[in-house]
Amino acid sequence: MAKYLLGIDNGGTMAKAALFTTDGQEIAVASRKSEMLDIKPGWAEFDMPKVWTNTSQAIKEVLETSGIDPAEIAAVACSGHGNGLYLVDENAQPVYNAIGSADGRAREYIDQWTTDGTGERMRPKTMQAIWPAQPNALLRWFMDNDAETLGKARWVLMCKDFIRAQLTGEVYMELSDMSATSLMNVETADYDDEVLEAWGLESLKDMMPPLKFAGDLCGKITAAAAEATGLTEGTPVAGGMFDIDACGLASGLVDDDAISMVGGSWGNNQYASKTPIVHDVFITSRYVIPGYYYMLEGSPTSASNLEWMVTEFFGAEKKLAEAEGKSIYDVCNEIVASTDPKDSGLIFLPFLYGCNVSLDGKACFIGLDGWQKRGHVLRAIYEGVVFAHKWHMDKLLKHRDMPDSIRLTGGAARSVEWVQIFADVFQVPVRIPAGTELGALGAAMCAGVAADVFDSYESAADAMVSFARTQEPNTDLAELYEKKYARYTKILDLMADQWADLVWKA
Image (cartoon, rainbow, N blue to C red; front, side, top):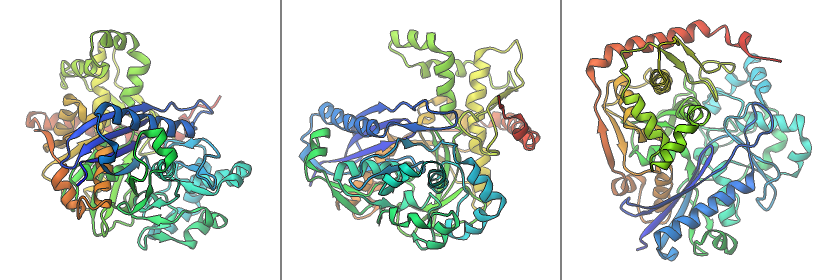
């Protein structure tokens, strides 16, 4: 039996590859950063050829670092951010930049479909809210604003489907990803003429690629991809999955008991069930395990808020930390750990890249005083992100009970201090899966199922999922965080009717 599985994960800004043994040991990891292009305010575009180059270089580095024979890799699979838009020609080559999941150019269509009831009318089929970076809205934007580019495109792809196409030369769309785009009927797990017609996209039906399941084999590594990555030509490539599914799978989410959270660019909170929720949650999609739906409440309100703070205001500290062989995030954690949560009622609204309560909502601090130190500001950011997760979790808990513990992945999970705040706010233990790249681990598990290394996702989880630590809640802080969260939600309520009037227009 082959010894290794390769998982590839493309999030909002990073291309990552990780090599695993079939018992879940992480052998080597590599990443490359894809810089967002400065096009227009509110647009989120990336150089699509660079996304592929970054991915292929990360794969090559993993193979070189590990020193393994690539022929011993049983299969490869990709995960990637959902939504956005990757337009390619008949040869799967880009005809435009990659559009990320934080793009806002198509806002007018969301406003229109919300006002005229189209979005709500489609909910029984799509089972999800509509928002500007979904491909239904972006495709309409191209139809009305850049028909020339749209005319060059043969296929509509999501991020990981684009990467898979570069690896195999074959074009498919995978179900867990596609079912979160408002472009199909989630119940029937297929394209639906009425859905496309609702968005005015019926003429683009032929641009929707054939659908595959995550664990389907979707081609093999081509000679060109082998040269670019160092992989062995002919290595099987699986369908792969939406990155939220990958993180859930890597957390051992194989039934309806557990809840998984991702604290990354997006703050996602999700669970699987055989019974879908049609209304009242952000997205219901098809989970990677056949027969299960995936209920998601999330928004781009999580760990990327800290990254912005560090980038814009901690430049000197970052250089000093690097000179000492430390991470600037370790420095931030130390500052937060030394700041008593009882010292300050400062509230941060983590809306730098999007808002869960209004399309017009913006980030801000409420309660900032001159006596407060940067520790109070940093702690407010950590707490504000957790409060946004709780706001979403409260919506999920209308439909199910709180689990005995929460499983947390993403950048926030690497911080003991941040995880402790999650535990203290939710007052349940927080379990951190072992490994550094959980999206890639979930993809690797999928590759194992596709290559018959495992006979099911359940057996893949038994073999490859373990937990690095569990952090228990501090019950003495329960009342304090109840008061802080009540303050947070009160501010949201007060601002609900004000955001649109506060949007800056020069």
